[in-house]
Length: 198
Image 1: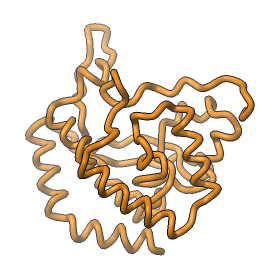
Image 2: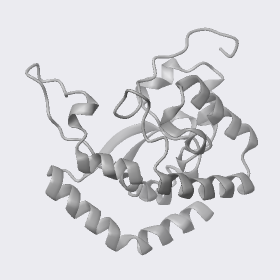
Image 3: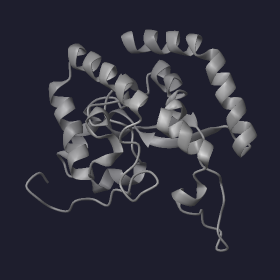
């Protein structure tokens, strides 16, 4: 109920800024304005995540999309650095697909790559922000990031969520942890293989 109420209030308050950003995306990168992709939600069930588009659809001679770094525009980098590209996900929160706080929804193709412990990140709804986002975001390695997601599942509380939201505001203002070193965004997760947490 708190998530839904906060998302509804956020969408109303941010209606004008959302419209302005949508217009700027349209002018800078053309249509479509929104990036829509299936992501795993609660218990891994897929939902359609929506966010502002930050990359072009440029393809190479073979017809495949160019690497992220080649398609990420200057305006797109700014949107990511300020996290403004994430604002449409308030709609996902309002729909009940996501929470304000929880592990970030990753890619569907990662599901079979998780160890049983890592897969526990799906025991809660994904969030706009989360424990791993305020402890390094994309700058930390996958093993650490996924372990922090599981830690959140085991320790989640309203007080912890409020702490995470407060820390998120500070990190966004400082624009920290936007990308992994040497990457335009975050290197793809390829699984960790069998181990003590498998």
